[in-house]
Structures are given as C-alpha cells and as structure tokens.
Image (tube, rainbow, N blue to C red; front, side):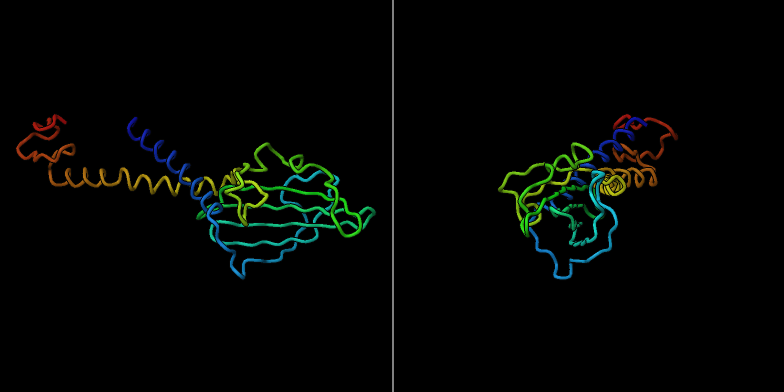
Length: 211
C-alpha cells in the first residue's frame, strides 16, 4: 500500500509540473493569432472583482489560439472629465485552461488622449498573485508585451490537466512493470524475476530471488 501511495504521489507531482510547463509554453513560444481568432461578446460585468466605483463594461472581445485565450473588456464614461476603464485577461493551458492573469486600467481623459492613470494597476488585484509574474524584457513578445505571466490557477482546469498528465506519467513509468508482472504471474513464473516456479508449492519462495 505504501508503495502504491508513493507512486501516486510521484505521478501527481509530475502532473502538476508538466501541467504548468505546458501552460507557460503555450504563451512563451511566440505564435501568431489566427485570422478568425477575434470574437465580439456582450458583457455586463468585469472579469475580476472591480472596485465599486467602476461602471459596468459595455464592450468585450475574445480571441483564441491553441493553449491561449485573451479577453478584453472596456467602457468609456460620458461625464467630465471622461474616463476609460479596461481589463485584459489571459488564460493558458492544454487541453484545458489552467492558469490565468488579469490586469486592469482606469484612465482619466482630457480631450481624446489618456493622460492620467486613475489608480495604479496593482490596486485592482483581488490577490497578490492575480496580476501574474514579471518577465524579463527578452521574454516579452506580442502576447506578453507589457503584461505578466499567468500564475493564478483555474482550479477545475488545473485539476483536470494534472490528472491527465499524471495518468500519462503513470502509464510511462509504472504500467510496463504492471503488465510484466501480470504476464509472469499468468504463466506461473516469479513476478519479481521471471523464474519458472513449476514444481514449487503455491505461495512458496522463489529460489532465484527470494520473492
């Protein structure tokens, strides 16, 4: 039982590591967005816990490519001075989205140009990790330019991907041994070394390996 528990723990750890690495690889490897990637959407609320003084968004769009989804929400007020509010959310992972990042801006406008940030970006985060992880400039490209690497788990997708990659790890590391022992047991050989146990009482000790 203890051996099985250790194997399960190893597969879960491998599943988590592979899950995160695959998700980060989806966004760190530069790839163009498909021509038909952009979709407008009707929206009534922000994609994070916005401050109470933010008006609801009135426009949204999404775009998708393998392993990456981006959502943009926006609204511009008609009062004076006019303000613009927008959020950008990225979710990454394969086959299910597993990590996300959301960053938000609020701008006070003079004429047609945004000149003053109403509040610092990080004040909009619902947790210290929601913004993401800073990247060196050498790793920033189209999807990550002036943004942060997603590190906030999407728990349903994170769990599903971890189980999937963990099961694949079990299949690679331990399934061959299970099949080998099953075949040895079926033909009456020692499951440990494959020695022929014909003539030895059932439950007896293998004379070759002592199993």
